[in-house]
Length: 243
Length: 230
Image: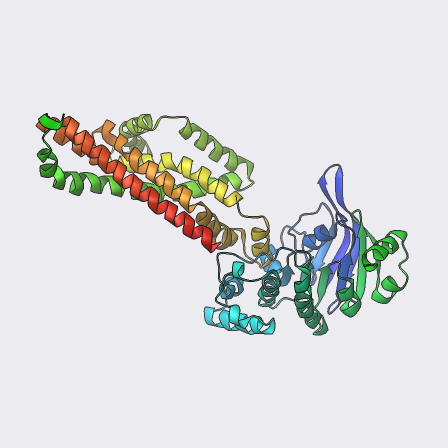
């Protein structure tokens, strides 16, 4: 589904953010990307739907090359859902309109159809009664669940999560993770940048460990948590699992 | 000290002052603000487009306009527009442009430079995650601007835009250089005719003060309300 091959990215000629990254996410697979901050994991996931440009290598989604100038990027992005660290709901629109905007403007759905779809997804994430509110009236956890619903409203073929729980208060993390776990169990193709190793243990098929722009470890979950091959991954795991 | 003053001249001139003068002033202010904000937003978008040439052109325009006194622009424009029109349309003679149209074009072009700086700040105040989220949903660049970035930029900048419009309201009085009877012009016409310039200018100052103060108060109220919503 998502093929990443030999991707390198430089922010400046001297600072290389990604070094020859190669991996893939198969249909229905859940892949967790972890690593210390500044390791390039967020950059990598943003490259997948071309929110970040990269200089070398290539990425394709469902056979369509992301870094081909001829690719209709808005059309491709509409098929891949993305959830951000800071939710990024549109603060000037009500929750229901946040869910409708792209359905109507991008997919061309009629308002009634889009609104009905939005309500169904709001119900799914347990926020139906908040449809008429503005994002600022919701807690962080609620906003992130709306953001997930907004992405799902586009009927995506895959979902990208960029540290979806990093900006949340601890007591709100589980409500977001629960939604993500459900999604994973339903067979959604997911690429998730997160430090939530509990989530990885529960639903991930593979875990990718990144450090200094490189993919250091790319292993099935059992192997990664059982016996990571690299020293760096071992040290990282011992640090975040010890508390 | 007011012994020699004749305030009745004001009462007699009221219909002319307000129905003709003030109507002109308010119409010019409203249309200039509308046009200026529209053109200013376009200029701001050009400057932020990331396209070198477009940004450079917009930047030069803003710097050029802002380095000229408004009176001069009004004056020159009034005399130049007929010739520019002639050149554009290829007509045999300078085309006739009414005083209103000429001053409206001048104010829109002039104010656009100032409004563009306000809108630029407004657009830049939107976090980069917002356009990223819009694009991740499949919105094109223009849809992202139209539905996500600009509505928020307008809302954030509304008090500043309105304050600039109040300044514009006062600036419209400068059309006196081309003898257009706006509110101030009408007052001075009556004043000169009746030899009561001091009374008329006092009254005009009072009216400008009253309108601007009330409008400023309104903007502050609005600002407080917006602050609560966020």
